[in-house]
Amino acid sequence: MAAERGPKPKSIEANRKSQKGAPLDDEDARAVARFTEEATKQYGRGDRIRPKSVKDKKLRSNLRLLENKNKQAAIEAKNVEILLENNEGLLETEHELERTYKVRQDEIKAAVGTETAKKGFELRLDGLGPYDVCEYSRNGRDLLIAGRKGHVATFDWRDGKLGCELQLNETVRDARWLHVSNQKNFAVAQKKCVYIYGGDGVELHQLKNHSEATHLEYLPYHFLLSSISTAGIIRYTDVSTGQSLGELYTKLGQPTAFVQNPHNAILHVGHQKGLVTLWSPNSASPLVKLLPHHGPVRSLAVDKSGTYMVSTSQDRRMSVWDIRMFKEIHTHHLRVPGTSLSISDRNLTAVGYGTQVNIYKPEIFTHNPDLVLPTPYMAWGGEGISTGRVRFCPFEDILGIGHEKGFSSIIVPGSGEPNPDTLEQGTNPFETSKQRRETEVHALLEKIQPEMIAIDPNFVGNLDLTSHEQRVKERDLDHKEEDKIAKLKKRGRGRNSALRRYLRKSGSRNVIDEEKERAREIVERRKERNVEKQKQLKQAYGPALERFAKKGV
Image (cartoon, helix red, strand yellow):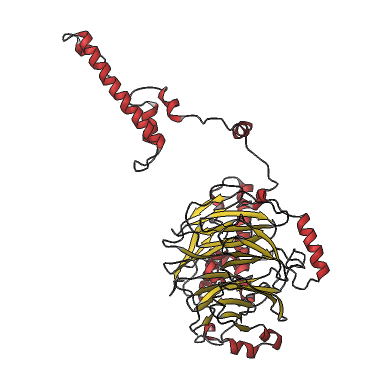
């Protein structure tokens, strides 16, 4: 006897509702639907796939599985957020009314260890400032400061050991550390040209071709020292061989900012007209032109990954750009035009303006329409001292500030990278003199050639897909490009001639270029010739037959 079958129990899957069809009286279902929708919106992988519209059964089942995997991955990514609610190392508030930017340096020194508290100090150098230059070496061990009146000093800022001290009695515009070695060489842009000094303060070289340099940059992987002059001329010199590369003319007047992209060694130059141009030694013209501001650019900074660029201008704006898409993310107003920018290893951004220095969290690099004015993470100033240059120390929670009365080192929790890559050349803060010598030799053997500098550094090793005809044209310097207008003149006549079609399809009427003007002139001349030809035919036919004269086209 067959067992009696009762009603089938309703499965849990059958009771589940879609996100839009969740019952309104069920709070849990609505919460799950809301959570799933937020996860899909934040971590989703594009538009939703609709398998029902696919006729093939196998493809439909595969798409259904793929859609379920994408949905589950978004939910799991949303669930993991609870594991990392706060960024490590940053200051945290105990309740909502507290603000981290109100914390003073003496309070931080009292809360941290003795060795960390020693890293926050202040050098009073009255009468020798303003100190517009403060630069840390790539491993963060040494500090280089320079005053506008000619005072230059290098020292190990952790141990307080002085390296050298110079009184040049000449205007100093900029200074940069060169490659990390036991000599600890550095370059100084003085009034007439650029000088290279050793770690003991002895003058080693005089680069006369770098005349009237206002800004300096050093490309460590290429051993290139680059400068830009008051006339807007960019110059490169290979410090390992002494060879000078060609000069690049910006043709935009005196520059206002000069910084390199650490990811691809492209130079970013800020100009008086609000332009930012990107330069490579392989191109005589700028690779990219950006217009982030309407006033003169005051300072620039690019993050370590080469993804974001921050700029300030005379119109009191601070602009954040995504360099991958050349698209603006945020624009904020400052009280005073920003004079200096620096981005740390952990993407904290320091902005020096007037007598203040504000430090912002990495939130400014994320697109958030509701973020009108970001709240500073930390602040320094208020003593009426005009700030010069701000620089984060690599692998340390330290920010160096050069100002009119000397130099200040402040503690910024969470700004430094705690795990340095000791295998990368020049970035080991604990290396010995023997390791420095070995690193210098390896760096010279692995030196990257200037021809490899490009916006996309991954182009090296890719296939060259240019055609044989294009290569022949590039080699033939006397080759003349085909004249489009001359080619169109021989193709057809009438209202639908090649010239008239070109004029109709060549874009907006407000856009005027040389080819379009030539095409219009040819059409007008052709009309005049046809009118003259018709008059001659009428005269030849006489008054009785002039109506048979062919009308000019």
